[in-house]
Image: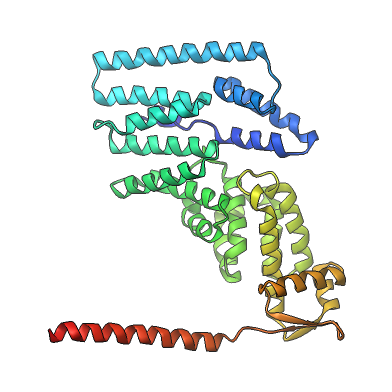
Length: 388
């Protein structure tokens, strides 16, 4: 795919899907800003089909004049693209024909004709004359379109297809871009461990502004890492990473969350977590569905980290450390202990929390016995084969 086509193929704009989500879920005083951004994007990309969908959802008010203008502009553009395809068939080779066809499919994706765009992408993908790089860019186009309209099964299909094509000879740029796309998608599916590994792997070479800005990418990746990385790794691989340091001041709540957790400043951690929920989790279309899960898991992580330092401590001192009431801590700990998420017991009479760590030595002993049995079985099978 030519450089011009590759730039053009980065449609539809995923930022518009975020504005649509924010328009439907944000506070009333913020909706005008997102509605204005949507209108500007719709006009710029002649998004007639997308505009009609937003009107049907009651996200935007119907404007007959705008709809007519978009319809005329999109029809004129499609006529030009059809003409280019015919000229490519008559005057050029198969590579140029594919390029022209890709332009048309991308334009259908751009204006919001999801089903038609997916169908045309698929038809070009199955042509025997389509090159490997063209196939990869088509799959990225299908992936973006599926992410734009939040089609999880289709996203998984395209991610798998992209991996297969890259394994057959994809270049470094497309390989790295795939990691970024998959990182964001894994985050949206609550797969924070996998997302954190991908984030760390591609952070230093991130070059996918069509997916999201570096700041937004750091925000999503850092939140995933904060939920799963060991304390030392969080500091070394995320907090002190040059790419994170460069942009983290634009997302202060995320920075305060990670630093407070690492420094064991739990009252500051709780305040930062509340800010993260308000400013990021509730407004991100990738994280909105997991906002309660995320805040719960981060509280459990902070409680467990604090309890690791003590054999016992008073409920009062723990409440003071987290900047909350004793009643709140008592209720939180009781809930998480009952769920098996925290290893401690509460002495209500004495007002004390006693840690009750699992017997890791016994667990390691049982694992060693199990692995030893497996090894003996394999040795016996191998000796039988050798004897034969």
